[in-house]
Image (cartoon, rainbow, N blue to C red; front, side, top):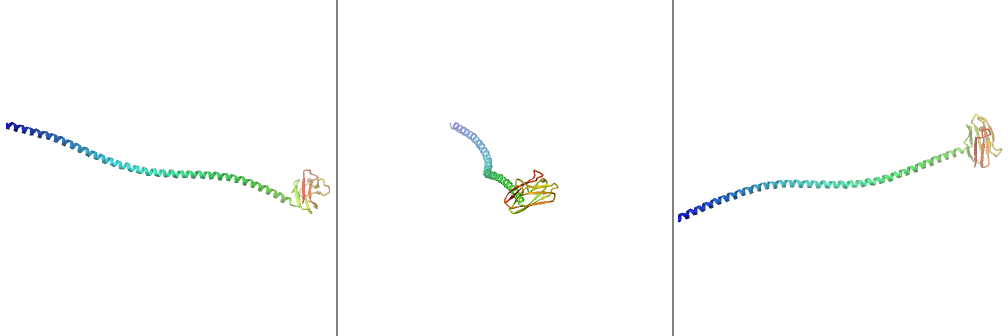
Length: 207
Ligand SMILES: [Cu+2]
């Protein structure tokens, strides 16, 4: 009896030890595998943290670039507004230049007309008439009453100073180099011509 009990107990104990050993070995193997996984996962985590840091740095750099680009856009918009304003100013100035050029041209034309009038007026204010090239110079003269007017023939041709209509007040036959004078005492317009050449005409205005 005791012998069988002892054998049974030892057997059971041996089985227990074997089972326990097997279980321990299995558990130990699982722990080793889990530790390996943890080490791998820790390595992955570290790599991901490094990538995350790099990505955050990139985001930060891109935000700086974006701010700079926005500032550039703002500056560009201001510059475009200035360009628009300057273009408007330029158009106004160009229109002013055109107006001023037209005004200047008109004024220059007026000056030329006035200069011509003045020259004709000054030329007319003389008491000396030259006969040259089948014409009286000046063709029209203006003198105050009481002025003696003298005609001098510079043509080789013979000319006359003959009054139109009012007979008698002018009558001079002039050969080359000769002069004829007449004193106008009363105001009026005195027209005359050359008796030899119908196209030669002159006027004395007595004021
Ligand atoms: Cu004549």
